[in-house]
Amino acid sequence: MKPNTQQLQDLVIQVRRDVLRMVHAVNSGHPGGSLGCAEYFVALYQVIMNRKEGFDMDGKDEDIFFLSNGHISPVFYSVLARSGYFPVSELATFRKIDSRLQGHPTTHSHLPGIRMASGSLGQGLSVALGAAQAKKLNNDANLVYVLMGDGELQEGQNWEALMYAAANKVDNIIATVDLNGKQIDGTTDEVLNMGSLQAKFEAFGWDVLSVEKGNDLEAVINGLQEAKQRTGKQKPVMILLHTEMGNGVDFMMNTHAWHGKAPNNEQLESALNQNIVTLEDY
Image (cartoon, rainbow, N blue to C red; front, side, top):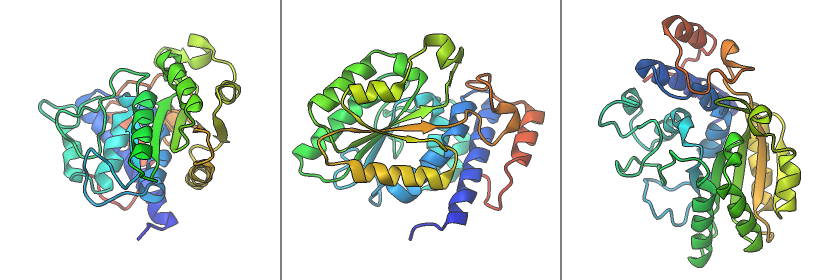
């Protein structure tokens, strides 16, 4: 049974709490982008994706997801745990020695839900395209999803993959760009202005839709549902998801400073007080 709207909203808040507590506990990690993508991950795993019970790397007869900007692993781990892939209590091991929950997702520890190692940026779209073509070869009608960061698009491999997808009519993939306009060294415009991403993606042959309210859960769900309706029409589908880095925590928003910085004790308390929910922390 799908969760109702209130349950989904509560889960978004709980995911934010998980992210904050995970990063604070080891004084390490990337809270900014994680907080900004909470709605996307909750929508994807709780509403949108066709998922089977259990996990296997083949991913046959179900939708599958790849995280390309792997540094936002805290939000990914939180939603995986709270979607039943592994015990929620394991979130307490984030970034610790011998943990399966490393700072960037890895596959060698066989953590359920992780299909690729994504420490180096720019590779996720290529991997996702391979998986999408494998599904076509296997007559598997399910979809492949991939999330990328906007700063990550400064890596050239993305653009080779974008060309390849359109040229080969890979129309069973939904790629999303977390368009928050910030990266570790400043705004994306300051570091390397990429101009109109929508115009570029369309010129590369993609079907592009924009979700202007990327931190509005209903808007994200509607955007993903519309994207699904656009698949199977000879074009790969791209979502431009406009989010706010650090969303939900007032002092983390409107700045790139929290891309990769952990809150101290006082900051954690302030942030958690802004995200109160009746669900239980790990």
